[in-house]
Length: 144
Image (tube, rainbow, N blue to C red; front, top):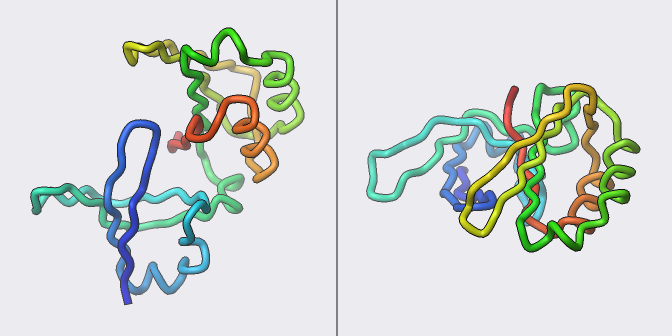
């Protein structure tokens, strides 16, 4: 058995092909709305590019990996954002992962800020709190 899924980030989406061995191992994590990190190779053999999955990391296991958390704050949120609450959320979820804040304007121009001292840990509660302040689809992960 194999699976096909759509992977989305803030700007686009791509189809991911998951072959049987990987699918059997991670099928329980591959549900709509569940966060996973997918690593693989890009397949450009067809008109529509695909990622052929080679590894899947369930969100619950990301704390043991070397991931960076990216938080995108769009221009329309700049004036209304509760900065104290955002700071409290970040400081109450300390961990080992770098945090990058991206300030994106309406022209898709971005300024990136990274603190050398603030590191965060991942949890469903942390993600939920960030999304409450910043809105959905404001977060993504990348490898260090």
